Every structure is written in structure tokens, then in C-alpha cells.
Length: 440
Figure: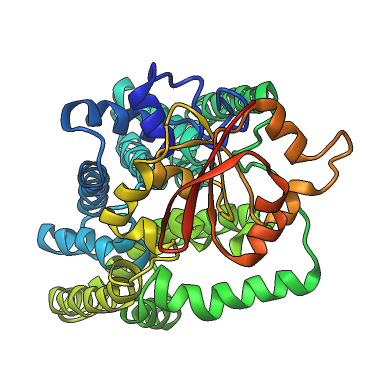
């Protein structure tokens, strides 16, 4: 959202996205390909930049994903009514239910991955138009540029093309996609070095065996059954996946290659899978495809699909709404959660000047809600830790911090306020205070 707002207020460059936690720089840094953010910025020029506009934009993108899921099911021979229910089933997955109106680039990556999948299916027919080849290649490229893990969907389906046509139909598009993704992330890496703002997370970070076990246990025992699929869909998936031995050849191959692809990604990204279970979104569509396809072997597939949609939809509502959309604080300070308090607080901040905010573990939430930019800290002590060439305090004084937005706890005061002279309290709201730094 912050990247989108910076595009909306700035030159809207796709090639040089900027963030709010920019220290004393212009905030330009590398990221995933910011097509989602750029699109929201353009949409906001028509509607104004606000939460409602962003949610409408997100919902429109997810609706396209459901239409593409419907088209894939229909192509694979599922009755159109059951294809509609299968597409709606995508919305009943709690993870998708939550993200369908949230600012998630993953939704756009999902759209392009499903579009590539649909084009690849068309390429398996005897008379393949070059337009299908081009559409599959460009869609796969865009999904990989936005979120690399979604390449699992199109890359695992190229075998269809090689099997039905020739190896050329596999190699040329696949190499084109991988080359394009590689070039962008090389460019992104160069951008991170311009201002030394390393924001995008394409790194491989080793963790201990105990942490790996904890992550795997959480993903299997907690994330999969109740968040990533939802209990009704999870139980149905387990019973169908292991209860029917003779599965369609296409389904077996699709599942096999997507699972192998995700297993590789999971092993590389294990350090983040504990707190980023939404990375599993890349293989949820094939889980849904398995369920809908195997339900065709039952006596009343339409009835079972209807019951599954209803029950999983009820679970998604129960799982998401109370603790995500109705929780009073939503893991942010009350001064941000309440619009009136937020407006009161931010009127004392000059958005064009540098601020120091915190403690903010995210490094972006406080900036976003107060429409500010500058430095942030997770804990006040770190501002006075020696970095080898000095402390943050020295650097911030040199760069000219104009405002402080901090909590009013004694801990923060002891480590921060007592060490910064020439400050003037402007306003305190729900435990957060704004201070103006008076420069000599």
C-alpha cells in the first residue's frame, strides 16, 4: 500500500519503486515487480487513494482469478454448474477469503499463473494458435516477476506441451520466462544497493533443525487444516486424495509436478514459512482441482460440491471475521485503529519532513498510517548501538530528523527522549506522542 501511495503521489515509475522506511534517502529500492502496486496507483487516480478503493481493486483481481479457475475446470470436462461451484470454492478457502480484499500482490500473481495454466491447456490441442503460446509465456513471466513461487503452476504444466507436441513447446517458453524473471531480480538487487535499503526477500537464510521442525509442525498441524484449506475442504481433500486409487492421468501428473516444485521452494524458503504460510497459495488451486475432479466419481457431485461450498464458506467466515476484521486493535496501536484518533495525531506531523517512529517491528505500519517517511526502530536501544561507524542517533542528528512519533512508555523515554535535546511535545493520543525537534 505504501509503495502504491508513493507511485500515486510521485511519478508512478514501475522501474524504481520506493518505500517509507527510507532513512535519509529517496526510498528507492528493489522489490518484486510492482505491477500490483502500479495498477492500484493508476486506479486510485480515478477513485482517490483510500481503503475502500484498494479493497475494490483487490476484489476485482480475485474475481478474475475465480473466473479463470472456472474456465480451467470447464476445459477439463467439469459440468458448468459444478465449475461455477468449484470457482466459488476458491473464495471459501480461509486464506483466499482473507486476502480477497487485502492489498496482496500474490492475488495478481495467482491470476497470471491461472491464465498461463488455461493457455497451456489450450496449447495441448492439435491446432494451437501462436496467440495461446504467447499468452501462456507472458502470463507465466508476469506471475514469476510478481511472486516467483507462483511459477510452480505454469512451469509444472509445461510437460503437457512437451508430451502433446514437441520439446520446443517446452524449452522456448520456459527459458524465456526464467530469463525474464532473472533479469528483473538482478535489476531489483541493483536497486537495493543504490540506497542500501534491502527490502525484498529473495534470500536463502539457514535456520536450526529445531526451528525447521517447529515450522513444519505448525504448517502441517495448524496452517493446512484450518487456514490454508479450511476444515471441511481439508477433510474432503484427505478422504478423496487417499481414498481413490485410480486418479485421472492428467491430475496425477499435475499434482506430482506442482508438489515437487513447491517442495523445492519450501526447502529454500523454510526460514520464512513459519510466519508466511500464505506462500502456500501457489498450490491451493491444484488442491481444489483434485477435490472437484474426484467428486465426479461420486453419485451426486453437484450435491456434495454445494454442501462443501456452504460448509467451507461458514468455516472461512468463522476463521477470519472475528479475529481479523472485528478485533479491536488488529495488532496496531489504538491511535491508528481509530480514524478520529489517527487524524488527530497526524495533523501534527509534516508529511514532507523526516520522522523517527517506533517501536514498529514491521518497519512500515507506523509510517503508512501516519503518512510519514524516515527512520523506524524495533526497540529504542538499537538507536544507540554501535554500528561500526557510529550510532543511529549520530546519523539521525546529521540527517536532520524533524519529528518523533513514539510510544510514551518509560522504557522508550529512558532510551530515547532523555538523549535527544531540543524537543517539544506537540500531542499525545492513546499512548503515542508527537515531538517536534527544534534544530539550532
